[in-house]
Amino acid sequence: MTDQTESLAPPSTRHPFVDQLLKAFRTNKLTWVGAVIFVLIVVVALAAPLLSPYDPLQQNILHRLKGPGPDFWLGTDAYGRDILSRLLYGARVSLVIGVAAIGSAMVIGSAIGIVAGYYGGKVDLVIMQAMDVLLAFPALILGLIVVAMLGPSMQNLIIAISLTAIPPFARIARAPTIVVKERDYIEACRALGYGDLRIMTLHVLPNVLSEILVMGSLWLATAIRVEASLSFIGLGVKPPTASWGGMIREGFENILDTFWLSLFPSLAILLVVFSLNLLGDGMRDAIDPKTRSDA
Amino acid sequence: MTAQMGDPVLDVRNLTTSFRIDGEWYPAVRGISFALQPNETLALVGESGCGKSMTALSILGLVPTNNGRVEAERIGFEGRDLSRLSDEEMRKIRGNGISMIFQEPMTSLNPVLTIGFQVTEALIYHQNLSRAEAEREALALLDLVKIPSAKSRFREYPHQFSGGMRQRVMIAMALACRPKVILADEPTTALDVTIQAQILALLNELKAETGMSMIFITHNLGVVAALADRVAVMYAGDIVEIAAVHDLFARPTHPYTEALLRSIPRSDRDMDTLHTIPGTVPPINRMPQGCRFAARCGLARDICREKNPPLDPLGDGAEHAVRCWVRGDHDLPALTEDAHV
Image (cartoon, rainbow over the protein chains, first blue to last red):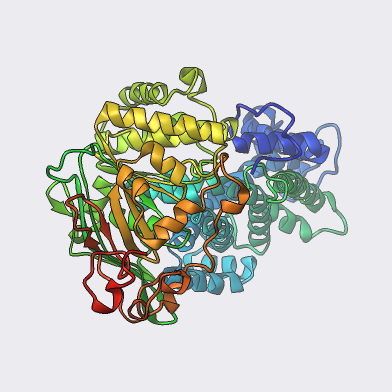
């Protein structure tokens, strides 16, 4: 029942999930590193118009394919556009698509998973079979199919990526739901006359939320990667809008002469994915059922 | 004496709850009937697996429907028959007209929601109060169940409460909508003895204050003596004896009741006089044909193994009924000889 390792400390007055998060940051310094890097990237993306030295779309044929230097810190591309500025604006595209796709996948996927786990039986079987079918496609292939069908646009990219992320969220929400619904306090809810919808949203969801949020941070990394991959093969955001995947591909044509065109957006992707993984792994360890206080 | 015989608050007639095991239906509660009078405490007593908790869950319609089934001639409450209501209508009664207190206070509260939220929710849900009104009411309830400095503990989580305090919170939630009937399923079993006494005193006090009725499920006859007005002893899904509490303790008639009373440890007697009842309650899919207790009963006759006896009143005018061929008021020639054992 009560956590043995912390039984000597006075019980905390915070929400149990907040405690878990604090523990993640206390016990694992890498979680801090991940969080700091990611927050910096978000701030930079938000402040892109203030930080960018140039207009990311402005072409200048005189300055094309310049290497990194004092005027253009990270150089210019084949159209003479400033790579640093494009990188900053590209962060916005990546984050917006990633957050929108994962946000919607989180909401839809957890709703599906909680319903499946809560009702069990045939409902569960049908829903999870459908999820397994979706899960059978690799994220990139499924994204490819959807974008190819709907046409490349930011909105369709979000739909495509969120579709690939729904099944994992359904699974991650379903597993703890199956455990939680057998708990005495859910029976107590029924004895108080609460309906299924109320029990699922007010009583089951808060108990599975930590798992979902941790999964969210890990999948945000995947979403950004898939977005870059789709943009790389030309199914992403339409040029001339700056996107990291698109920038890598544009640089790919001259990779041997002007490697920085592809290198810097690659590093940006690496940094975001890396920071999110550090953050997500740290939080996942903290909510591990073996170390959880309310398990 | 016991509560006055008027219109019962809860009138259970012929309630049978069955479960499906390997495709066959087996009754866990077999056609039991009882009436709960206003402001009365009826204790349901028996070993584990006697169908006590199932009776409570059946009344509230909380028996899982995928492998359970509840049939009743009538479960009368406020002029309605609960056994015929839809789940939608039952939801308005649960926690509102009839509420339940569970055995395990440590796990019956949601660990990620504050105490205040959980008490407030019931009020908002059933009584359409605004959040502010409901919070005021919830605070009053927590004071009523004697939670010290309730105001400052309102935003705390269950893990910051002790077992006894959590059970008080559970009681506050059950009382939130001023129910007519409380079903208390072993509410003190998981608590320390001193805390047990506090909770029992609290329940008694609240019962007197609010005029509610209570069905108190327990296997502890000491608790029964302290709390109940009437007692129904259950064995293997049957009520085997039902009587006013002092009648039952003064004149335990069913051999099972007698055995239960003999198995209470007493500080003024040697351990030698402490009896156990050999054997266990038969599993519901292997019920004997005759009296369910026959196999463990020292008085069993042939007829006991052939036919289950009816629950007949003892012929002395008191509200005391017993389900026993030997001890009951039966005029079976073969039994008369031994009827006064």
